[in-house]
Image (tube, rainbow, N blue to C red; front, side, top):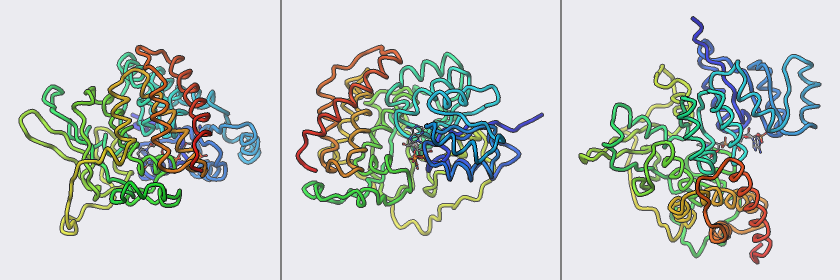
Length: 389
Ligand SMILES: NC(=O)c1ccc[n+]([C@@H]2O[C@H](COP(=O)([O-])OP(=O)(O)OC[C@H]3O[C@@H](n4cnc5c(N)ncnc54)[C@H](OP(=O)(O)O)[C@@H]3O)[C@@H](O)[C@H]2O)c1
């Protein structure tokens, strides 16, 4: 019997994509890399092609595809654009899709993969933030596994194994608090892009690193948890735990709490998602409890970290409010990274977008795409009126 799983990694050149390939390289008899994709990092994609010999790759633009075609000389199929991403996510020679694109771009290929009956290891939390209802309906309809890669959701999945859904009182997502946990809000206007990219615990792509600094990442994770574990916002709690040793917890109705702990290394939850429910041996760094000086916990400061409060608000508003939240946040983060708006303006942009749109309930996929595009356009216009460049 062939136990090898054929894997397509959407976003193989990113932080999660690279760590996924590291995990896969440890288990050559369990996995075969079928397809890899990049946005524009053609050099790294070429190295990955040489090492993993996928059947095909996808890049977003024709100019990059032409360069790659010359380099691979017919040995690897080269596809282009969102169509190419959807094509490789649905091919019959793929068993599991790793969805590790960043942002809204992940939605369509992830949905297509589910509709084609593929199991999905989901890193791209934005997929559930913008289209949670549609995605979870598709997961049920096509009877596929949607396995979280995010360390918090992986922790919750592990805590929930063997438990009854109705026994859960609440989920407790831990957050490191990011680099500005102890900085006074009055100092937020001094934060530079370099300061915000300097995350204390994790090395990640730029977008999630800024989201971690504003705590929007935790807000997106709360929304992701709402859909993955089918619980309302009132049963999802966030606690600041700067040591990032406990990755998240589940509290049960009888007062018992289960936590999942580990050295912070994304390869551990990635391997769990790829191998679920198996736990083959892997040499990742172990927690040395004698070296753990302390574990501290505190409530997040929602006045200081307004993005987290806005995410809770959007979840409460329901419908497409979280699509609006995500689109405005993506525009705000892009503009902050480009030096066009200040760190303090990120929540302003999101707040303005949420105030403008009445949430649309029972939205179709096309509604979501339209609302995303409209919010982006409006947020661009709003950003241009801000006086803080
Ligand atoms: N990094 C982490 O530790 C971590 C942990 C938990 C969850 N996540 C989630 O995982 C996802 C990926 O994060 P990351 O840190 O790996 O991001 P990243 O390092 O920025 O990588 C993103 C990947 O997507 C590609 N890409 C970017 N924009 C694209 C577009 N418009 N269309 C198609 N491909 C595109 C990039 O290609 P190029 O390299 O060519 O630009 C790259 O391969 C995010 O949703 C994030 O929230 C990440």
